[in-house]
Image 1 (cartoon, rainbow, N blue to C red):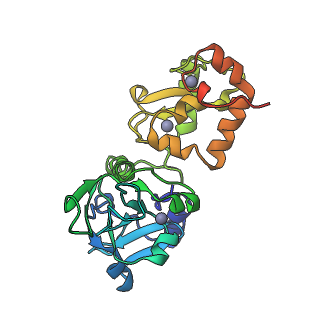
Image 2 (image 1 turned 135 degrees about the vertical axis):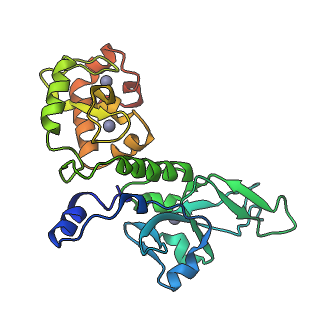
Length: 275
Ligand SMILES: [Zn+2]
Ligand SMILES: [Zn+2]
Ligand SMILES: [Zn+2]
């Protein structure tokens, strides 16, 4: 995840140098329509290979996307109207233009640069720039998805109680026992498509419905096969598009494609059968 710099080796590094974790409530702030180009020039924003950030008044990095406003919605080279895209990395576009705004809200206001054409201000949910998509390891397709992911992570952190010990991935130390026990209770079957995986248990995940990895109440758990887990929401879909999650999904499909079809898994037809 490009937006989660609190997990994994960064967290370990801070622990090693004895820096206490930040107050969770100070982590996510809504940033709306700030002058990104100017902030970059003044050192109050960061743009690197991991993402774009604005430094807030507490000196915290806030994850943002950036976009061009004002923007030419109509242009003699366009066939009809064209909407601006949002950017998350130092792509070709930002190297060729200036005057970018930054936000992390669901929608943004963009001014029409040509005052003789159409409405003056558009309130838009932007789509991701194609160049940024090619450069990114992980991304969200729309500004609304970008915001939802930030909010979801923030909420998951907010309910975290400081007295609970967690591993570097954010799971409680007894998670492996809980997850094993829960899969057994569910008779090693996916709770959505019912595929039975008692002889291939690694393809069975235990999912936290409210995304809070500390909330291990049975009502918050769901035993899911890799494929149903991927399609449980948009954030998961992105997480399974790369790295070891994607690798596991590919293995699962390769090995169990026919069985997934037999139990009418609703997602299996989205994928081609591999030989
Ligand atoms: Zn871009
Ligand atoms: Zn399933
Ligand atoms: Zn999950």
